[in-house]
Image (cartoon, rainbow, N blue to C red; front, side, top):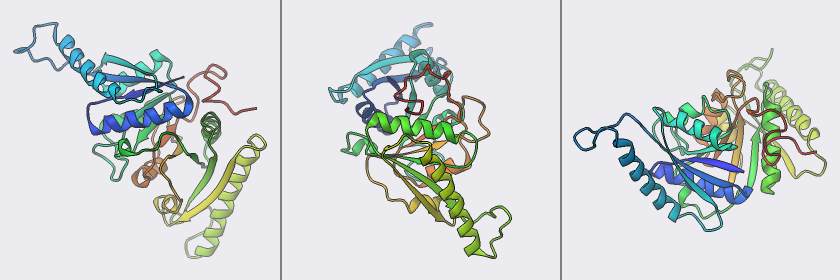
Length: 305
């Protein structure tokens, strides 16, 4: 099992590697540590024509060696350097070439506010990757937690929730951790035919629906699977997710938007709102699996029998 970690010699890159190490140790996976270099940043005055890629590659190899020196001995890590006009596209190409099951990147950068903020690379990945993308919160490199403690799966009612649930169940089983199913109920919007002038009725309708979603999900799981289910509400999605207790070592999995092309990610509005406020890693899952059924490792995709 392989995990691609997109690396830069920055704090965000260190966060990505730290999360990759945590996942690799939890899942028994290997890390494919990837640096993607731009092919168009040649400095003619300093580098002979045709030699700039070799100079950049040597620098990248030094960055990778320094990063790998800090990886614990019980985690296998393999370095890779490639060239692409787009860092995100380069990571996706490496993911497909290496047959990796997920991409891990650091969330530090411009964009959304909070511990998980979107830079242009992460934003592009969350709108185009064919495999799950895990985004590391800023500062996770400073955590002493070695393994995933609990997997939280935020379920909705739209198409693709079954793939999200399957992936969360398989990840939880492979990690040997409990699974927490949550339904986040935002009470601001009008729900069905109910209007906000009757807030008690709106809340009860929303909570009932959330419980029904979770009950259906739990019924689909293998018997005796370690799972809990929680419905939490708030005036917004952000308020609702903030009511959940979180501990270092947790992660949350969310589904891709219904706008996503098949086997591709597209960051939906709910996932984007969660990104703004959570302080744990978030994994965004495509609404359809990339590989044909049966061709991906059963430790990652496919509901257990």
